[in-house]
Structures are given as structure tokens and as C-alpha cells.
Image 1 (tube, rainbow, N blue to C red):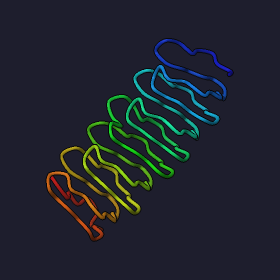
Image 2: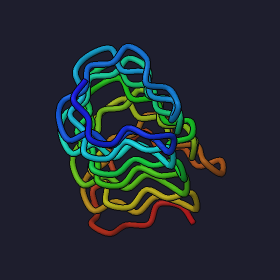
Image 3: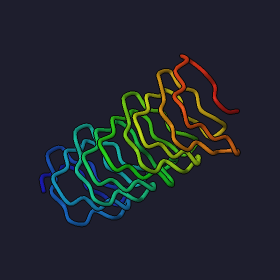
Length: 157
């Protein structure tokens, strides 16, 4: 491990970190991690992360994640099965800046089987800036089984 500052509030590494168990913040990576700021209020990596169990904030990822800011005020109940590009993944909803492939995105009871492009997916509903293919979107009893392609459409809330 090459680190300038790995302290009790988390890990702040200036160089790559290979760790089997980095779990003060609930992070358990199985492969290399490049991170500028990894701390107890969440995980803020600036480069790709390969992790089998990133679950302090409820993220269980089986494949690489490129994320700028998933933090402790969110990611409860978010389970990603494929690559995720996200600027902001948090508890009051999911705000994606790029495509997301997810089998189970269920903090807000959103279950998607196909691509989702969304700028604002929040706890009181879904605001999509791009097309969404949803098989089961049942937060608040709302269920969609066909694409919703209207820019800025508020699906629920």
C-alpha cells in the first residue's frame, strides 16, 4: 500500500492501494483500488475500482465501478451487477451521469433489467433525462414494463 494519509476517518491514498480488507468504512475490495479519498462518510474514488463487496453504503458490486461520489448518505440497498458510471449515488435517490446496468436497484424499489440513462432518480419518484427501459418499477405501486423516452419526464412523485 502506498498511502499518505490512511486514518481512522477512512483512507486517503495518494497512490494505488491493494487491499483484501479495508472495512472501517465497510469497503472490502478484492482487486487494485486507485483512490484519492476513501473515508468513513463514504467512498470517493477518482479512478476505477474492482470490488466484490462495497457495502458500507449498501453497494454490492461484482464488476468495475467508475464513480466520483458514492457516499454514506446513500447507496443503501443499491446492488449493481455491472459497470456503473456515476457522479452521485445517494440515499435520497440515484443520480446517474452515465449509463447504468443494474439487476437490483431497490432502495427506491426500482428494478431494472436493461439500460437506464437518468440524471435524477430520487426517492419521491423518477426524473429521467434519457430513455429508460424498466421491467418492474414499483415504488409507490407504480409498475412500468415499456420504455419511457420523454426528456425530463417525471414518472412518479
